[in-house]
Image (tube, rainbow, N blue to C red; front, side):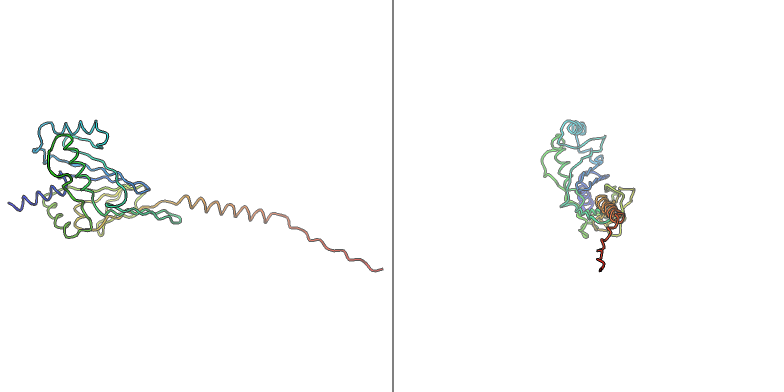
Length: 246
């Protein structure tokens, strides 16, 4: 029984408040992102006083600094991210394609743990404690991830991570785990990712219109120059008249 309690505590810390959670990660061409986390906290509502969710909902609607919303027992929080700690972003300008590569190293449970903690405190739902109780899920940490994935499987936790990039995805995988691709969006099961313990790699590409325009302009100008010089009449050489001898 004591072990089961520890498992539940570990699970709650890991997922930062709920049993069903999803991340929607939208990336632009510069690699900057908006990540929205949606969490169902119904399993923990018994710990909240009556009217707590209404307080949170009111706060989300009036505080512009808190990018959040409440729908029943579901809380949604949005945060801005840049390449660095949680993911890398690389752009390769080739001919004829520009290739974008996003490498997700960590699931940002740490950032959203702090955001949720701040939201609940500001709404007066919780008091005391330590802010940001969860660490990021490090997709390279094989030993810890596999152990925690086993706990999450046991409790049938639904955790999804969805990434949307500007153009159609060419490749979406984390080691041997392939994402479910729909156009420019790839979706992964986080528990699968933890068991695999490899970073998510998303590759997408688009025509390098800048280079193509330059190449086309060079070809057109070259063709015009060739036509001009070819059509220009040849200069007749002047012949010297020889004087006749008397």
